[in-house]
Amino acid sequence: MKKTILTAVMALMMGVTFAQEKNKKLVMEVNGKCGMCKERIEKAALNVKGVKYALWDIPTHQLSLIIDERKTDPMKIKTAIVAVGHDTKELKATDEVYDNIHPCCKYREDNTDDSGQH
Image 1: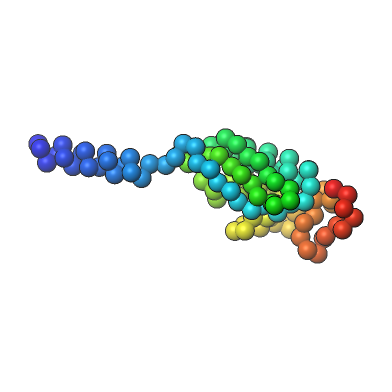
Image 2 (image 1 turned 90 degrees about the horizontal axis):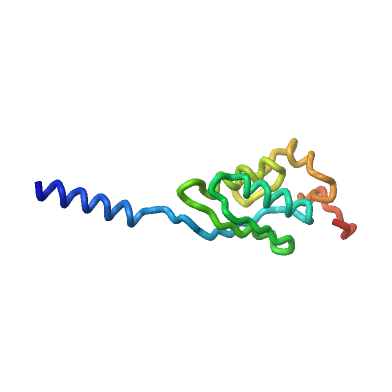
């Protein structure tokens, strides 16, 4: 009986040690160029269950997030972002999706808009 209780206590302690965080901060790089990109990226991230906060910085391309790790993970967020046409370091938007974003939002090298109007 003592051994069973001790085993249960040890298992519980290990579970607490490896518990996922309710409010984890993350930063990831997401390609984009303008205010429309910002809205699209933040909306895509916030539509992922477990994302509590999303703010994309245009000059640095950094997406700052607060997530509940019990409900989501970074790859789910990146998948949602590429689905709306924005590349991350690990995942790339399909050409079909990328081609459908607004012309001023084109960030890939071969589609650079140097007019400065975004």
